[in-house]
Image (cartoon, rainbow, N blue to C red; front, top):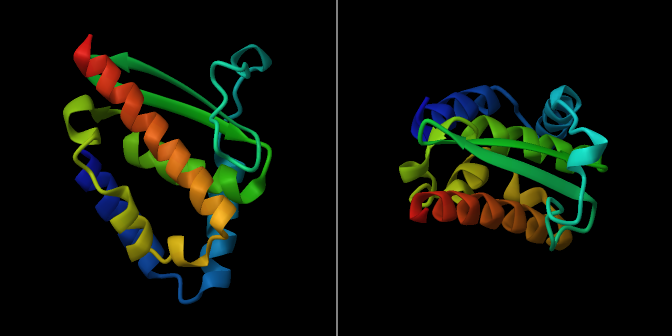
Length: 139
């Protein structure tokens, strides 16, 4: 699936949610559905720096597509991870750097409601995904 297709699905899903409380509850539900990483995958190398909560992200490439898995110890961050995984996991490497995730997150009403710390953490997770995709393309 392309990133644009995943983004359209996410926009459609969030369009039915009328206010921030409904969006927040949905994001929490996405986090609850996010599969956990194993204890062995939660290392200093997989930890995402810049997040107020603990976040670990594991990526690898299959057939030119980035596979993203991640976990956090905070419910809202787990939900944000759920959105990012749906958006980027399985996406072609060539699409990842060009896609503006901030615009999508603005469109669905997420970024305006996040604290500065959560926004910084979200930016760190996005940077990590872009860096991993860039490194895979360069290899």
